[in-house]
Amino acid sequence: MLIFDFDGVLFNTLDEVSLTAYNAVTGKLFISLEELPGDLVGLFRRNRFHFQSAGDALPLMSWCIKNFRRRSHELLSQEEYGDIIDNAGISLPRRTEIFFAARKRFVERNEERWRALNIPYQPLWDELIHRGGSRVVILTNKNRKAVLDLCRSHDLEVLEENIYSGDRGVKKIENLNQIRRRSNGFQYCIIDDSLKNLREIDCHFQREKEKLILLFAAWGYIGPEDESKAKALGYPSFSQRDLIDILDAELI
Image (cartoon, rainbow, N blue to C red):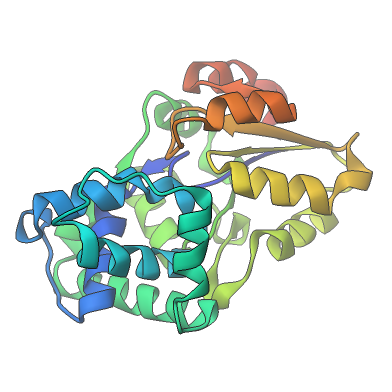
């Protein structure tokens, strides 16, 4: 069974997440990146690879708003980013609720514009459509409704029960336990662009190495050293074409 992350693996959602994070932090309801300072957007994009949960986009965006005028090209170290999260002042579940509520307001105001900011990765996306959306399993920190809407609006008829989402702050480990109970002993491969996610899963399920394969998506939101770190940790680095080559064997 091949299990896909969503943001950074199936969809390029960087523009939408940037705008939604800004709206969540400021209380505004902008629907175009042109309404935001370019240096602010660039700084947030540059450091997007640091966060996993949607709620962690808020403290990062708050930091970017405060610093983009004088530190527009800053690349945060892991320690600096950790300090930002530690001093967020609001719990992660609450931050996640705020982020998803901002996304809901955006969709309600202009759903067409929201969809246009989310682009599926090609050629992987068309290959999945060709093989059938009902076979696709998604493990994500994104909310289920957004995932379902985007998949179906781009012609992938994914099953709702195959979307393991971050609603109510549910973590990937919790959702993966549900998937494992469904897998009937099959080997499962996880494709994710977050080295943090892969390491957390690896550490948590270290007793099941023979059933668990972790693959690093080299086309996603990755840091400058993530690919070399993935190799050192033993996680194969895959391109979209590499992944397409194994779809028929693993998409079961």
